[in-house]
Image (cartoon, rainbow, N blue to C red; front, side):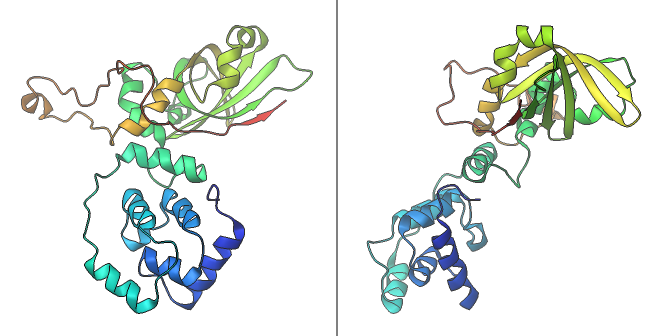
Length: 267
């Protein structure tokens, strides 16, 4: 699953690890015999967390390796004299972004959990709210686009979105599709406003408005896990807690790449 990692290098690492667990990046390099580039791919994917190293620490160690592995005792001596470097940790949001860039998923918090305070301010409910809302009521939902499905002979498009609470199935009729065509086909994250339709256990939202939220998704890497206002926050923060609010930055794009989501499209 790790982007750019060759199967032969993965097999060599697994074979070496089967003999004895690795105790360092250098040990993995020396005993597996794989190129430094393969270890960089693993560091990008946060594969060295089991050795107590985060992404930046692991990349620092990998890029400090030489052209060829040192013999066992020389490698041990080199580690003894190598100075410890304290690196600034990544934000929790950036860790999630890097997970998606490396393996297209994350075992950390869902990306939308980082922007939930902003979505709440805009009036977006979590997808799980669909289970409680009554048939015919209106709702506003936001989510990452997982699936777009447009039957060839039909006049409807089905879109599945996901947030940290679950998924929602959206129905977009032809007239609305033509109006929001570019957003529907290209946005990585959207906000949908529409009417809830329930038939037994099947729940859909009949959309009447679609908004592109890709920029908000691209800000995840700049964020740590959001703080939600508590009873004492007003007193501690001069009468209001602004930490749960987000202001659009002055620059048009975040300085680092955002989450890259591969939606599944069927036509």
